[in-house]
Image (cartoon, one colour):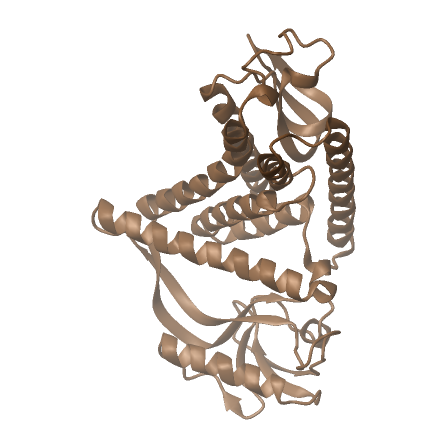
Length: 368
């Protein structure tokens, strides 16, 4: 059930993105003859009055098709409502509408969460620091640490007496300092498993990652706190709370991309494809509804940021060509545009297949 919920969210986000392109074209009177979710062979289709709607076999995105370059295009070459005959600005609106749709949709998702569930608010701080995630094959996992564990003590640092957010943040900083200053020497941690009362002592040996300068143990740290949801009183506070959550998620996305680009050699292996994203969403769905709302908003904004990158076959690639056309005063030769876009599409599909195989292998072997 949780997997289907995650798949449904991904499909909805792709639908929102492509619907943005489609609506921007139709509202300007531009001909659009195909609306497809996925690539490759058609699994299901419906022939509308002006447009063919289809689901395709490879769930790696979608596209809106235009009749401009079809051999059997029913419109004359000089038809002003063909996309290629429209001014640069009109075409730019169509190409950027998918990104804008995902950004707007993310805010709507967060607003629905605030209206229906409320705003997550810390209610009680429990002893220790919780580990939401543990890196596969990292020093902590090798030592036996698991996601959801609570760290009660690190060497001589007692983490049991945490009463508020300030104390929790201070404790996390001290934890990180101990690992950073360990010089690769073993660190002793007292761990309490989720839902259990017994405490287990483990020895973790920090390692310096390739390209890094400080030892790490491969965990994420968070205050061990209980969360309650409080619904804001009035539409103004609801909009403000949704905006604050939106800003936080955008910041997380941008920071993640900066870390990926700044240390690509070490972070490239963490890139997830559709299968990996579905697993993440399914895991979050098991936690609570708010996690699923946040997941939908996060992936929607992530999809917008990726698509705006100036890479072939992405919206940003099309916008890059439009910018070149605006500067030159005329389009680049069509053969060059087609060759670049087709190459980019093949590379994108190839990357998607590789990520699907990698994520599937990780699920089967339990490495991820």
